[in-house]
Amino acid sequence: MEFIKEESEDLKIEETLKHEDTEEHTEIAFIKEETEDVENEVKHEDPEEQTDLMPLKEESQEKNEMEEKNQYEKFQDFMSGGKSLSYSQTHETETKNIKVQMKSHIGKSPFTCHLCGKSFSRKTSLKAHIRIHTGERPFTCKQCGKCFNQKAGLKFHMRIHTGEKPFTCQLCGKSFNRKQNLKVHLKFHAGEKPFICFQCGKRFTEKYKLHAHLRVHTGEKPHTCKLCGRSFSIKGSLTSHMRVHTGESPYSCQHCGKCFTRKDSFKIHMKIHTGEKLFICSQCGMRFTLKNTLNNHLKVHTGEKPYSCQQCGKSFALKGNLKIHVTVHTGESPFTCQKCGKSFTRKDSLKVHMRIHTGEKPFTCQECGKGFIRKESLNVHLKVHAGEKLFICPQCGRAFTQNKSLNVHLKLHTGEKSFTCKLCEKSFTQKENFMTHMKVHKGEKPFVCGQCGKSFRYKECFNRHMRFHSGEK
Image 1: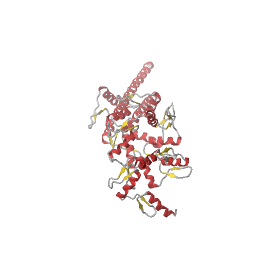
Image 2: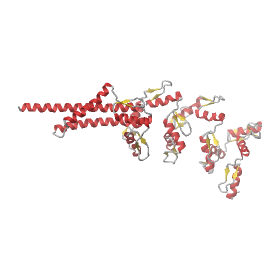
Image 3: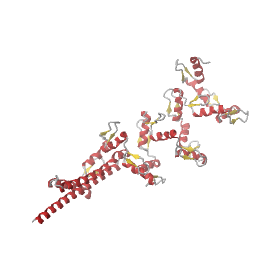
Image 4: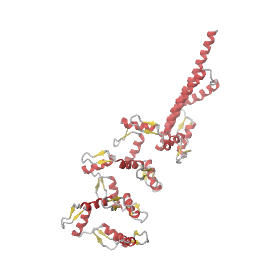
C-alpha cells in the first residue's frame, strides 16, 4: 500500500509539472507573438517612431526571461510544499494562452485597424498602433516636454537626461543608451554594410539609411517646412532647419561658448580646439579635419570641375559654389540684414556684414594690434609689414599686395569702366565705387553715429565725423 501511495504522489507531481510546462510554453509563445506584433508595427512607422518603439523588443525579451524565472519558482514552491496555483486558476490561464497561441498558428487576427486595415492578435497591440494614426503621445518627459506614444520610449529617452549608457562596445569602449544603437555600431567594426543602392552601388549599415539615400536619386523631398515652404528628403534635416526659425542652438562649445543648431557641425567645430587633422593630401601633404574637405581639395590637383552652370557654362569644383553663382543670374539675395535691409546671396556674407553694425573685429594683427572684420583683410595687411608686393603692373611697374588690386589698377590704363549706373549712366572702374554711387539715388545712409544719431552715406564721412566726438585730429 505504501508503494502504491508513493507512486500515486509521483503521478500527481508529474501531472502538475506537465501543466506548468504547458503554461510556460504557452506564455512564451504569447510573448513571442506580442514581440512580432510590435516588430511589424515598427516597420510601418517613420524613423522617429521606430526609435520610440525599439525598446519594446528588449522589454519583451526581459519579460520572457522573467516568465521563465517565475515558472521555475512556482515549481520550487510546489516541491517544497509552498503555495501553488489551484487547478481552476491554472486551467483558466492555460485556456486563455492557448487561444492566443492558436490565433498565431491559424493566422487569425481579430483586432483590425479601421484606418489602414492592419490586423493584430491582441487588443493592446491595436491600441498602440492606433496612436500612429491619431498622433497621440500620452507619455511626456517632465524635464524637456518631449512626448512619446510608448511608455518604453519615454523610459529610454530619460537616459539622455541622466546620461546613463548601459550598453558598452567591448571592442572600443564606446557606450550607448540603447541596445539597438550598440548593434548598429558593431557593424562598423565588422565592416558590415548589407544594404546596397541598386543605382549607384553605395552601401549602408541600416535599411532606413538606404531609403533616405534613394531620395537623392528620385529627388523626393517629403518633409516640408510650414513656415517657409522649403522641403527636405530627411526628417532630421527639417528638424535642424526649424531651428533657423526658432533661433535654437542646443549644442554649445565648452571652450569658446559658440553654439550650433546641428550636432555634426558641433563635432566638426570641436576639432578646431583639439587640432585634429587626420586626413592628409597625398600630393601636397596638406591636412584636413574632414574627409569631405580633403576630397574637395583633391579637385585642385586634378582640375576636376563637375558642376556646370546651365546658363553661362561656367564650371565649378564644388556644388556650393555653383549655387552661389546661379544667384548672379537670378538676382536672388535671400539673406537680409535686419538692421539696414542690405541683402546677400550667401549666409556667411551676411554674417561678416553684421560685424559692421556690432563693431566686432575678430582678426587682429599681432604686430600692430589693428583689428579686421575679415581674415582676408588681415592677410593683406600682414603683407604691409612684410613689405611683400608680388603683383606688378607690366605697364607702369607699380606693385600691389593683391592680384585683385592689380586688376583694378590695369583698368586705369585700358580705360575700362565695367560698372554703369542705369539711372544716370555714370560708369565706374570699381564695384565698390559703383555701390557707393547707388546710395545717392536711393537716399540710403547706412552709417549711423551711435552718440548723436547723425547718418552718413559714405563710411569715410562717418569716420571723419567720429573724430569730432573722440577729439582725434
